[in-house]
Length: 356
Image 1 (tube, rainbow, N blue to C red):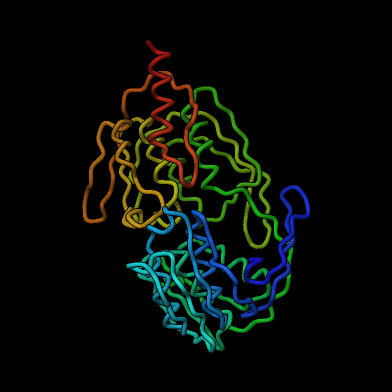
Image 2: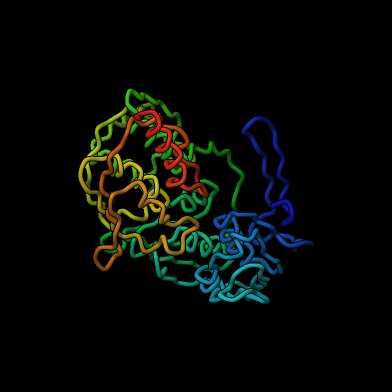
């Protein structure tokens, strides 16, 4: 953001101040924008840059360079942005020429992707008229809530059974606003599952985001018999949050419907851990998007589930409870780039050593 002209200062522990440059006000960066391993950051900034008359080079580490960008670039090109030099498939490093006169579009996303939607909406801020995004399945709506909090005119309506139609009026006068960022539910997923499967656990997590489009894992775990209680509900910038109390529970297998996938797409790996400790079979459907996510179901999960196989046209994955020794509950995982199968493997080895 500093390279694009914004002023960003740390004002205290967990506190930052950002002074923006206004809609379409980014300055042209003097060096490539290096996003390290952040796919979300890279794709969203592509959207913001696409609406500005500047040229920027996007780059990242070896992992980010391997990830596809074309699904985000396609709608941005429809809005007037132009992709210069890039690797095959629109991969990084790439040069993006923002639109001098960005166009509002009506765009139907090919998959439920908050990154595609958000990139289009951020580019649409600089376009005159209304930019509309239609989703067959609703993805997380943090961008819509944030834009509304900062003064944008944006609406979101139901579209079909599970979708949304989001309409943004371009060229708004955005204003600064304070934001309290809630605890990330994807990061909270690991201690939640750890508490559920370790006997005697009683865990409290404060200010965890409870946005309905992010709580698919909590819904699924409760269906499996998990004891998860919410209290001290509040909201900030449109985002609901709550204190969660999680206690060790006897879990049972369930079938996860495909329409729930967008609300828990980052949590299927840790759900597989919970499923391996549950009685019976857990079937997860709607996993197609994991083929292009930054983390994928690792083959090593077969070490912790008696069976894992594709089922049906939506590539469902089946997890059955394996025989467990006493679980020490250590090293359950790291998000978003950790590997639960590896970390639970370390835990499982310790458990087996303890149970001998």
